[in-house]
Image 1 (tube, helix red, strand yellow):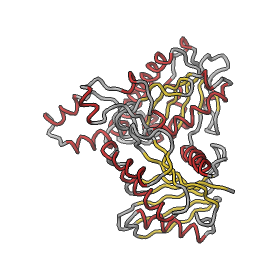
Image 2: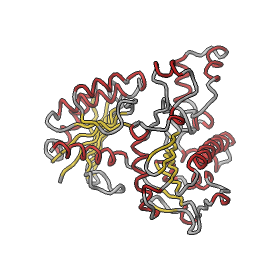
Image 3: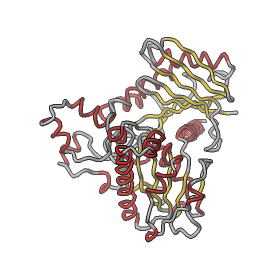
Image 4: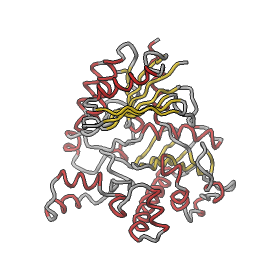
Length: 401
């Protein structure tokens, strides 16, 4: 059987899966793994396969050592990348700027282009490059493919993509809306037409990717016309630790009046804000426990979260003109029945009616949770970004044959 190795390289960790590109979205990967605490005194490699978990604890000074240790562990179990029919290695790359829209076969010039985009994603693209360079060195004969988080939103309409700042300043500094979670939004939105029995070329939908990071998109006939994240993944919806949309004047106020440095403000808005900043926790399961125990801060955080979510849903309904489907995906969207119900509460006048019994069912694959009479179909569709990357990478590899 042919597989794709999918690598998501972060600054201090590497996630990877070996995936059958022909699998269903709900299928478990053939292998999944995680390299943690790279550069720290005690690191860990965890591999899962066929219901078993294998763990190696040791110092992992670099990404190279982490992947080498992972491959060594896989080899010992007879499931290493050189022991299987790996047809491609797919790499998640966070920022493709205006350069990349489609998946790209990774050659040296492509790596340098990704490197040139580091100013747009200084925390992510360097780590993505590390993963690419290490994997190319370890698996030099297999095609490597870059799949970009921003790719799906590359051709947003100018009215949605541009900010109302001086055009020359924006152009010089590459300031525009790029959008993120594009692989997830594309993967989920592509499944919806079949689920609701509509032609993909005549389907207007809203996709809500609600995890610790969260984003919304408006997709018209297979093409996105708007998305909530912007130049960075900080914009848009309230998230687990990120603020989402704020008055930009707050940054100046905190700098001038609060005496905070730019780095301190960056850390505040990205890591100490959102649901965590308001309630003290960012896991929605913990938040629900606090709400059930009548914690006022948790209830306030939840209401702020829902209010911002409804604001985006409403604006995208107007942008689309007609909405055929609203879909929830990712950890919170797939598993939190309260968020789904409250996000679409009291929208009967817009043809949106959730069936409480369907909504209360546990997460078990794609399903419609709206009533039979609801004009707008409401769905839960599990995302699978790794499978999407595997499918795209396999297609690029097949084109080389």
